[in-house]
Length: 59
Image 1 (cartoon, rainbow, N blue to C red):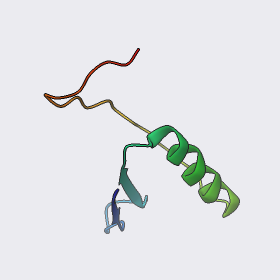
Image 2: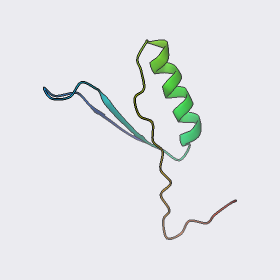
Image 3: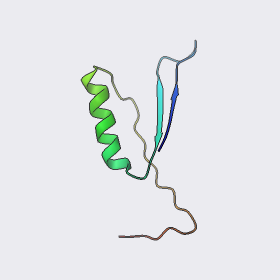
Image 4: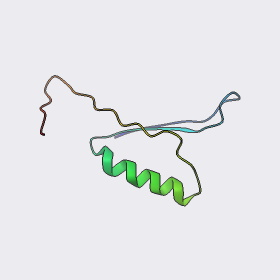
């Protein structure tokens, strides 16, 4: 898992949290619930699929 937190500078008003992991759907729900429990709003949630050369579609 990789985690980066970007604090807002003078021109920004939002904190940016970047999380990269293999188990994204469950992590999305957990992080969103944690932020909501602290009365913090999620303005954008994106979880793109990135395929590597050795990936196989399991669908």
